[in-house]
Image (cartoon, rainbow, N blue to C red):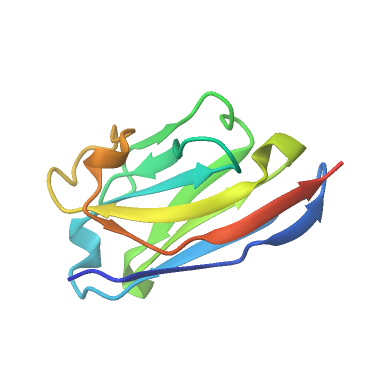
Amino acid sequence: QMQLVESGGGLVQAGGSLRLSCAGSDRTFSSYAMGWLRQAPGKEREFVASINWRSEDTLYADSVKGRFTISRDNAKNTVYLQMNNLIPEDTATYYCAARSRGPIYSDYERLADYDYWGKGTQVTVSS
């Protein structure tokens, strides 16, 4: 069973950058599609970005397109989210998620698409 641990969150000023990391425990990490989702206080969890098993295909929410980049290093069992030009609206808890079925695709935007979740890392962007 896959266990996911996020890191890299913190407090940053608007316009700044952060890189989130998510380490997976399963030795078959490379056979999962991976995603990042976030949840702001009082709001529903929403899709941010996803990547297929071999980094051939990615998908982004419109709100982060051009500012965030998802990538993965299967040799390190890790997926990343590089976040640039952060704005206060990006403040949320960011969750890493893994999907075992159909890893050749990346178009997994729904929460129900994912089989495993991390506990999240907090990102706070001050104005």
